[in-house]
Length: 167
Image 1 (cartoon, one colour):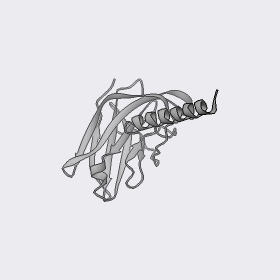
Image 2 (spheres, helix red, strand yellow):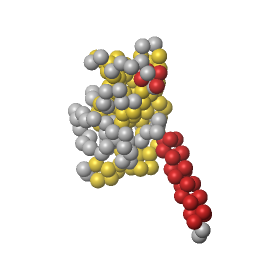
Image 3 (cartoon, helix red, strand yellow):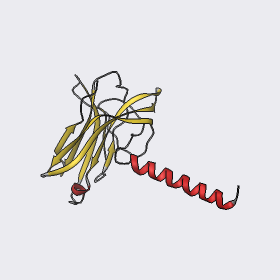
Image 4 (tube, helix red, strand yellow):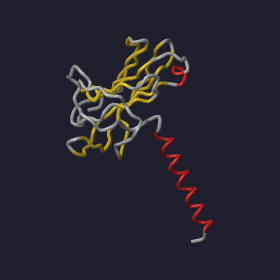
Protein backbone atom coordinates (compact mmCIF):
# COMPACT_ATOMS: atom_id res chain seq x y z
CA UNK A 1 0.00 0.00 0.00
CA UNK A 2 1.45 3.38 -0.97
CA UNK A 3 2.06 6.10 1.65
CA UNK A 4 -0.48 8.33 -0.09
CA UNK A 5 -3.12 5.59 0.07
CA UNK A 6 -2.40 5.02 3.78
CA UNK A 7 -2.71 8.75 4.46
CA UNK A 8 -6.03 8.94 2.58
CA UNK A 9 -7.38 5.94 4.51
CA UNK A 10 -6.34 7.47 7.85
CA UNK A 11 -7.98 10.82 7.02
CA UNK A 12 -11.19 9.06 5.96
CA UNK A 13 -11.27 7.09 9.24
CA UNK A 14 -10.81 10.26 11.34
CA UNK A 15 -13.55 12.09 9.42
CA UNK A 16 -15.94 9.15 9.82
CA UNK A 17 -15.33 9.01 13.58
CA UNK A 18 -15.88 12.77 13.86
CA UNK A 19 -19.19 12.58 11.98
CA UNK A 20 -20.40 9.77 14.26
CA UNK A 21 -19.43 11.69 17.42
CA UNK A 22 -21.13 14.88 16.23
CA UNK A 23 -24.26 12.96 15.23
CA UNK A 24 -24.71 11.36 18.66
CA UNK A 25 -23.58 14.30 20.83
CA UNK A 26 -26.97 16.04 21.32
CA UNK A 27 -28.74 12.74 21.79
CA UNK A 28 -25.98 11.58 24.02
CA UNK A 29 -25.66 8.18 25.35
CA UNK A 30 -24.71 7.58 28.91
CA UNK A 31 -23.39 8.30 32.31
CA UNK A 32 -20.60 6.81 34.30
CA UNK A 33 -21.51 3.38 35.57
CA UNK A 34 -22.10 3.66 39.30
CA UNK A 35 -24.59 2.77 41.99
CA UNK A 36 -28.26 2.50 41.03
CA UNK A 37 -29.75 3.66 44.33
CA UNK A 38 -32.43 6.32 43.87
CA UNK A 39 -31.07 8.53 46.61
CA UNK A 40 -27.55 8.61 45.22
CA UNK A 41 -26.42 11.82 43.58
CA UNK A 42 -23.16 12.34 41.78
CA UNK A 43 -21.62 14.76 39.37
CA UNK A 44 -22.43 13.72 35.84
CA UNK A 45 -20.07 13.08 33.01
CA UNK A 46 -20.12 13.42 29.26
CA UNK A 47 -18.37 10.07 28.78
CA UNK A 48 -20.17 7.25 27.00
CA UNK A 49 -19.64 3.98 28.93
CA UNK A 50 -22.56 2.17 27.25
CA UNK A 51 -22.65 0.50 23.87
CA UNK A 52 -25.50 -0.24 21.44
CA UNK A 53 -27.39 2.85 22.63
CA UNK A 54 -30.78 3.90 21.27
CA UNK A 55 -33.37 6.44 22.34
CA UNK A 56 -36.57 5.19 23.95
CA UNK A 57 -39.89 6.97 23.46
CA UNK A 58 -40.34 10.62 22.60
CA UNK A 59 -38.15 13.42 23.92
CA UNK A 60 -39.69 16.28 25.90
CA UNK A 61 -38.80 19.94 25.37
CA UNK A 62 -39.27 21.92 28.59
CA UNK A 63 -39.77 25.69 28.77
CA UNK A 64 -38.52 28.15 31.36
CA UNK A 65 -38.41 31.96 31.31
CA UNK A 66 -40.72 31.94 28.27
CA UNK A 67 -38.35 29.96 26.03
CA UNK A 68 -37.37 26.38 25.26
CA UNK A 69 -34.87 25.66 28.01
CA UNK A 70 -33.88 21.98 27.78
CA UNK A 71 -34.64 18.60 26.27
CA UNK A 72 -35.11 15.38 28.26
CA UNK A 73 -34.49 12.00 26.60
CA UNK A 74 -34.42 8.38 27.75
CA UNK A 75 -32.10 5.71 26.37
CA UNK A 76 -31.33 2.03 26.62
CA UNK A 77 -27.82 0.71 26.22
CA UNK A 78 -25.51 -2.16 27.08
CA UNK A 79 -23.85 -0.77 30.21
CA UNK A 80 -21.66 -1.96 33.06
CA UNK A 81 -21.98 -1.49 36.79
CA UNK A 82 -20.65 -3.25 39.88
CA UNK A 83 -22.86 -6.28 39.08
CA UNK A 84 -21.54 -6.68 35.53
CA UNK A 85 -22.96 -5.77 32.12
CA UNK A 86 -26.64 -5.63 31.19
CA UNK A 87 -29.21 -3.62 29.26
CA UNK A 88 -29.88 -0.48 31.31
CA UNK A 89 -31.91 2.70 31.04
CA UNK A 90 -30.54 6.21 31.51
CA UNK A 91 -31.62 9.76 30.78
CA UNK A 92 -30.06 12.96 29.48
CA UNK A 93 -30.81 16.65 29.86
CA UNK A 94 -29.49 19.00 27.19
CA UNK A 95 -29.78 22.74 27.94
CA UNK A 96 -30.48 24.73 24.79
CA UNK A 97 -27.96 27.33 23.62
CA UNK A 98 -30.49 30.20 23.85
CA UNK A 99 -31.08 29.41 27.53
CA UNK A 100 -27.38 28.86 28.26
CA UNK A 101 -26.52 32.18 26.58
CA UNK A 102 -28.51 34.08 29.23
CA UNK A 103 -25.40 33.71 31.40
CA UNK A 104 -26.95 32.94 34.79
CA UNK A 105 -26.03 30.00 37.00
CA UNK A 106 -28.02 26.79 36.64
CA UNK A 107 -27.59 23.09 37.30
CA UNK A 108 -29.29 20.36 35.28
CA UNK A 109 -30.37 17.09 36.89
CA UNK A 110 -31.32 13.82 35.17
CA UNK A 111 -32.76 10.50 36.29
CA UNK A 112 -35.01 7.62 35.33
CA UNK A 113 -38.58 7.76 36.67
CA UNK A 114 -40.11 4.31 37.25
CA UNK A 115 -43.91 4.08 37.24
CA UNK A 116 -45.20 3.56 40.76
CA UNK A 117 -42.02 4.74 42.51
CA UNK A 118 -41.84 8.10 44.31
CA UNK A 119 -38.18 8.89 43.48
CA UNK A 120 -36.11 8.76 40.33
CA UNK A 121 -33.30 6.26 39.93
CA UNK A 122 -29.79 7.10 38.79
CA UNK A 123 -30.31 10.73 39.84
CA UNK A 124 -27.38 12.94 38.85
CA UNK A 125 -26.77 16.69 38.99
CA UNK A 126 -24.41 18.34 36.54
CA UNK A 127 -21.85 21.02 37.26
CA UNK A 128 -22.77 24.70 37.18
CA UNK A 129 -23.76 25.66 33.58
CA UNK A 130 -23.04 22.16 32.22
CA UNK A 131 -25.20 21.92 29.09
CA UNK A 132 -25.31 18.11 28.82
CA UNK A 133 -26.00 15.94 31.86
CA UNK A 134 -26.57 12.17 31.98
CA UNK A 135 -28.10 10.06 34.71
CA UNK A 136 -26.39 6.95 35.98
CA UNK A 137 -27.53 3.86 34.00
CA UNK A 138 -30.00 1.76 36.01
CA UNK A 139 -31.39 -1.76 35.70
CA UNK A 140 -35.01 -0.87 34.95
CA UNK A 141 -35.61 -2.40 31.53
CA UNK A 142 -38.45 -4.60 32.82
CA UNK A 143 -40.34 -1.59 34.25
CA UNK A 144 -42.31 1.25 32.70
CA UNK A 145 -39.92 4.22 32.69
CA UNK A 146 -39.48 7.84 31.62
CA UNK A 147 -36.47 10.08 31.35
CA UNK A 148 -36.73 12.84 33.97
CA UNK A 149 -34.96 16.18 33.96
CA UNK A 150 -34.90 19.37 35.99
CA UNK A 151 -33.13 22.71 36.03
CA UNK A 152 -32.28 24.51 39.24
CA UNK A 153 -31.67 28.22 38.76
CA UNK A 154 -30.42 30.51 41.55
CA UNK A 155 -30.60 27.65 44.03
CA UNK A 156 -34.29 26.87 43.50
CA UNK A 157 -36.13 24.54 41.13
CA UNK A 158 -37.14 26.34 37.94
CA UNK A 159 -38.43 23.74 35.46
CA UNK A 160 -38.79 19.97 35.11
CA UNK A 161 -40.14 17.49 32.61
CA UNK A 162 -40.54 13.85 31.61
CA UNK A 163 -39.99 12.10 28.28
CA UNK A 164 -42.78 9.77 27.10
CA UNK A 165 -43.61 6.64 29.13
CA UNK A 166 -42.08 3.45 27.75
CA UNK A 167 -43.23 0.02 28.94
